Length: 418
Ligand SMILES: *Cc1c(COP(=O)(O)O)cnc(C)c1O
Image (tube, rainbow, N blue to C red; front, side, top):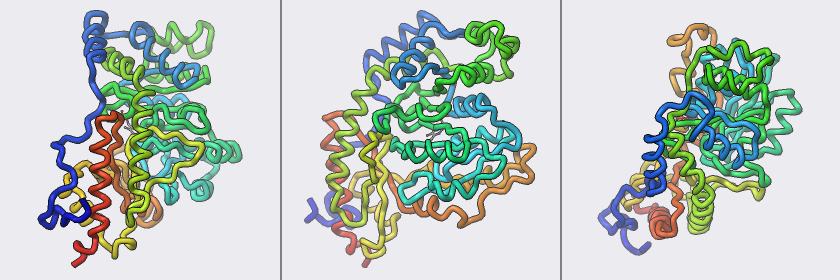
């Protein structure tokens, strides 16, 4: 294969399968039946019953937490988690600079300040930089298990303890990932997960908050699940129970049809993860001695969920070939789903993080990071691309074709430099 000229220069492509090459979630007859049956049972569930209770119970037992509350989106779950954690006006929350914006944006709706901290070369929160950003108003630090690769939770737990900060988690890429055998999303005071379309566990649209803490759980209910849930789940006589009818005023419930899909998917999650781990290991091994392309570091304590396989591109190893030219050649080889990171980007580049005061009251004095202030987040973002991680044995050939396409372009990089 490597003897053929690059497809970009007129040779035969390495990937010949017709696209799209990756679709998620896998929809099977059990999913169709579960959603169809749900339509006959209830399409609106105002309390913790039916498929909503089934999904929350199954998630709580899967993760090993006491309480799970489902929501309409992951963004809503993050909003409820922060509100329940008591984060309010003027409070600062340390968030990694490189993540999806919704890790941080709900803070703007609580009057709080996201404080962006740099990441390290692996894309994980840099605790030295995070430590420098702590002030008297810092309340919490957020762990984001980007691409399904668990953060170093030993380090994060001791960092949070040492500085007296609440540890919160955004597990949206990392359903079923583990650190030292413990599920991500169970290390902090609470965690929020997305169940959006492409996430490892999908409801199409949805999310949930997980916590062991009863007070946090009651406050999550008050934030977005008013009336019946609050009345039945917050004990009578608890000081918050008198707010049950209205909650704090938002309605963020999951749709029962979405809950039915996620519930059916959850029973297959471990199978998906085992398949992804086998294929990710195979792809990393295939790329091991390909110059210019580096597989991610995975700690021996970590079992990733492999939401994607993030690869670091090192142009110096390929004569300075720019990443865009490299990816153009990879795409011409037919590996069209080898992608730059898209919506995962340094948050400081978003106008909302630079000038929130232009669209949100109370933020006139908030200034996002100056250009160059979070250099590693910018560098990691500018030098990475990601591959889909398939889970079925039938897809091994496609995975092999993708890594072959990358190896081929790397082997022929000098043809692109002329
Ligand atoms: C998808 C995602 C969210 C937001 O979830 P939605 O369900 O799309 O609202 C938040 N954080 C991360 C890291 C995500 O990937």
